[in-house]
Structures are given as C-alpha cells and as structure tokens.
Length: 465
Image 1 (tube, rainbow, N blue to C red):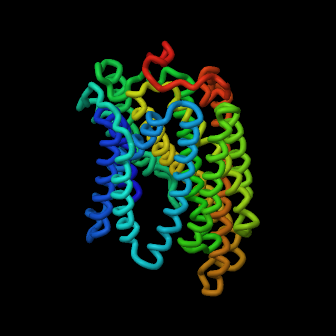
Image 2: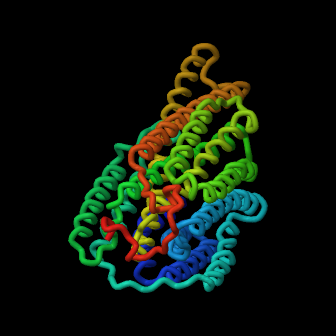
C-alpha cells in the first residue's frame, strides 16, 4: 500500500515539477488535485487488492503534480524577502499541522468508521482546494517539450531506486534483504537509467532537468540536506510509532495524539524562523536546527522498554521537532534562492524527490540497524533463559516473560536506530558548515538589510544564466 503510492509519487516528481514550468503551474496543480481526489474516491470503493493498489498509484501521480507546483507557486508569487519568508513559514506550519491532523483523523476514521473513509475524506478537501486556487495567478507557459527518452529514463530511474530501497533492509525476523536478486537488480537498473538520464540531459536542447540547477553550491547542498532530513524523519516517525504501539501499548488513535506535540512544535518553530531569517540569515539557523535535531535524536537513543511517554519520549519529541522546524524554512529558501522563474518547478520537485528518496533510505538503513539489533538481542536473551526454564513461551505462564523479552529487544533495536539517525544529522551539520554560503545581496538567506528585489531572469547572477 505504501510502496504503490511512493513509486509513482517519487518516480513522477521531476516530470510533475517540469510540467508546471512548461504548461502553467496553477493548471497542473488543479489537474493534480482533481486526479488525486478521483483516485481517492475510486480507492474508497475498492473490492480487490489490485483495484486498491492501482488507485494508490494514481494518487501518487496526482501527488507528484501537486507537491512541486504548490511550492513553486509560493516562490513565483511572493518576492524574495519578508513576504516569501512568511509564506514559507506558513507552508511549513501547514505541513506540520496537516501531518498531525492526518494522524489523528486517520486514527479516528479507522477506529470508529471504516478505513475507506481515510480515502473518501480526501475528495471534498481536494475539490475545495482546487476551487480555491482560482485566486492564484497563472504562470506563463514556456517554450519546450518533453523528450520521451529522458522522461522514461528519469521516471523509471527514480522509481526503481525507491523500489529497491523500499525492498531492501532487514525485516522483523532479522533477515537482511540487501542481497536479494530483486533489490540488486532494481538498484543496478536505477543506476544505469539515472546515468543515462544525466547523459541525455547534457545533450538535450530542452532538458527535463537542466543541469544548471546544480551550478550553485549552496543549492546543491540544500538538496542533499533535504535528503538527510527525510532519511531521519521518516525512519524516526516509523519506528517511534512501532515503539508506542508495541512496547507502550498505545492504540492507533492514541499514537496519533501522541504526535501532536511534534507537529505543533514544527509549526511554531517554522513561524518563528520565518520572522528571524531576514536578520540572522539561513546558515546560522540551519546550523542551530541541525545541532538541535542531533541532540534530540541522541536523547531518543536513551529509551528503553521501561520509559513512559511523558518521562522518556515527550522531551526528545519536542527537541527534535524544534530542530526540524528550524531547518525547513531556510532550507527551502536556500534551495529556491536565485532560481530562474522557469526552473522553480524543477527546483521544487528536486526538494520533494529528495524527501521521497530520503524516506526510502531511512526505512531501509535505519530498519536494517533496528531489526538486526532487535533480533540479535532477542536471540541472546532466549539463549540465556533456555537453560534455566526452557524456551520462553513453551509454557502458558511463560508468555509474559516472552513478551517482556521481545519488548526489551525491540527497544534496544530502536534505540540503536535513533543513534544512527543522530549520526546522519551530524553529517548534515558538517555539510551545512562547509557548503552553505550566502551572498550579502540576498536578504532572504544572508541576513542583510540589502534592498529587496523582484525575481526575474534579468536579476540573476551571471553564473546562473
């Protein structure tokens, strides 16, 4: 269910962002919203697995049209400076708030109504947002076309990368799948297709992804940092949910409510940062956010099967969310700073593609660490107890002992996964310190009082022309 959406969403992201640049962003956004709503309606009526998975894939295609064009519209609608900073802050806050509402509403609908309503509820929301986009200005259509070979190479390459990473890693039994034939074949084919895609782009007159987008070192670093943020965020939220539901015994609804402080802190931090960035600049905020996230994840790594939500989880949840909320706004501004108007959809799609690929990396790498440590810990516990009273679970009265052993092992694995995630954010901190540089005539990201300028091709630096 997750992969059906992730494959089409991640694979079509570049195509969706570029379609907005060439065909008009509002037009593509509305089309994506209507496609997503129609797929949600069809999925709610599904009577077979194939039907449901197909609608999930179509939902992903709609999402690939929505995500990059929505962010690009913010970039082109609001001029660089305070206006765009506030818009990015609202965008980040709504993303965090939407995630929280989705968790809680999903738990409510699944528990008290039906899983089908998790899909049905998207229909009025999508149609309502599509109607509201009439207030947005339409971007100009650009000269260009979609080359079939580059579209296939780029889309299939990213999709196979996401699929290979999603299928890799170690499962709950401690069995690694990194050497599976389908994983190796997917990753190898992805590498070939993505290299071919770059070669095609270098020779194309109308490239789907003009390589000039990577000419700015800070922008390229921002794309890598987003990949790391998504790697950490997806992995942590996934395994924290497992910890709450399996070890602490939370229901799906209670788990959703437990994440409200996370989403709320992200929203508050994003709002504060959007007001600070014009004075401090992007780099100090990125450094502070990376450091805060690292400390929060290290705090997470101290958890055990005996912690409580308030005593052991709430503190690191708030601290990690504050760090991520501090990073989101300046990261988006750096990635979209001085981007040509005709390339803003592409830059936005690269940010979103980084999130999707990073999420797959997070589940694969952190999953490998977590389940390997958990399985090895459980084997050691079972081995030490076997000689004393027989295998845990061999007698009815031994079931509570077996359950406790499993909880201890699972907590040990998740703790180690959080520690590895903290290592990722240390790398993010190093990349920020070494690669992020801002110019003094960019008030949105440099923290100067330079005069605000409109976004236009004439205002671009010579290196970006």
